[in-house]
Each structure stands twice: as structure tokens, then as C-alpha cells.
Length: 104
Ligand code: SF4
Ligand code: F3S
Image (tube, helix red, strand yellow):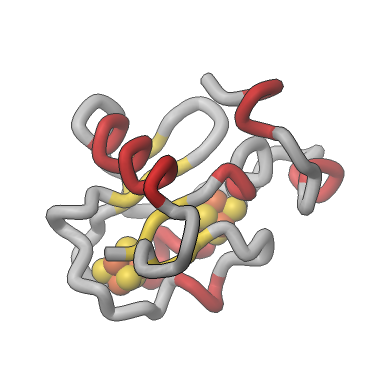
């Protein structure tokens, strides 16, 4: 599966949503997550994210994000259409430590 990492937090560009063939993105206040049991591993979302927030879970260190994606995709609503990113999205791009400061 692919996972959305903390790089998405407060960027939420949503380009990923438009390309997913199985509509497996779910929306929280500050980030999106992928439902790992619905993702078909096609990989098309990864290069679409301007924040480089999407990675395959086979990359080292992704366990935390896989767990977060699994947990919150079961709680948050499905999203299939992109809306505009937050007005201040670019100011959060590449910022470290967003999970501790801004995750909700
Ligand atoms: Fe959707 Fe493919 Fe991305 Fe999985 S890898 S979330 S199926 S676009
Ligand atoms: Fe987040 Fe990137 Fe999608 S910032 S909403 S994973 S395009």
C-alpha cells in the first residue's frame, strides 16, 4: 500500500484525490490518509503530491504512518473530489515536526 505521511499536514493540496482510481482517500481536518486495505498499489498518486507526502509503505520508517492511515481511514469521511488547498498551504511545505504541532 501507499501511505500519506506527516508532510501532508496543513498542505492538503488534494491533487492525490483526483488521480486515485479506487477513491481510497479519507479526509481529516489537516491531512488526508489512504485506506491501506483499499489501495491497489498503483502508485499514480505518489508523483502528484506537491509536498511529496505519499510514499510506499515498503520504504524504511513508514510503520507509524501506515498505522495512522489505517486508523483514521476507518474514522474519517471518504473524499473523491479535490477542493482548493488551504490558502497558507505553501508555508507548511517541507516544515519538520508537523505531526506534533498540528495533527488533529
Ligand atoms: Fe490510490 Fe493508487 Fe495512490 Fe493507492 S497508490 S492511494 S490506489 S492512487
Ligand atoms: Fe496531502 Fe499531497 Fe494529497 S499534500 S492531500 S497527500 S496531494
